[in-house]
Length: 199
Image 1: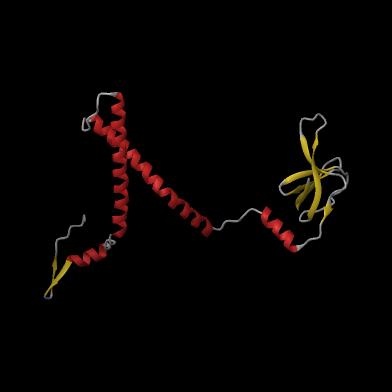
Image 2 (image 1 turned 90 degrees about the vertical axis):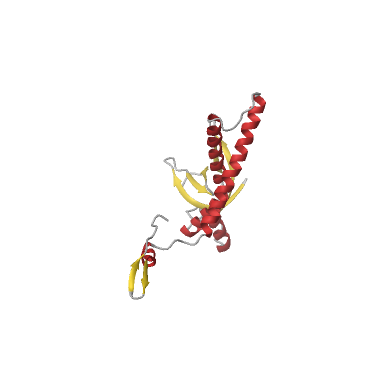
């Protein structure tokens, strides 16, 4: 099998065999001696899985005499380097991706929150006797599922409508502006007006 890639690192063991990390995989050499390529070199070789002496494992190995260092063609080397390098994510890209991901999750979160509220509400209605439950087991299940579905829909739509209403309402004036509105000038005299500060 022909392998082509950039050498990321090399290492030589105590017996004099050099191994090369290429395209994320470590390949051993069948030739003793120093490295034939250095980190950053573009190489090509025939690789195979060499079985261990007992046959229990296989080691990725460079076939003897096939390792070649290729001329550094800038476009080819740059393309291979970009493909093998991890992609850096900037803060702006991270938050943009998070925002688009969260938009897809929001309806699901709202639905499951509505479902949880609906189950709690129906449980309360049944416990208080506010919902009549049929006596047959099959009818009980259908009645409970129907009640939960109705309440889920009600809670879900009410929460969505509430969010739309809140986002469309004008923002409330700050406290300083409320105080200024509370004072009324009559003629040249300042008259204090009663103000409901809770609203």
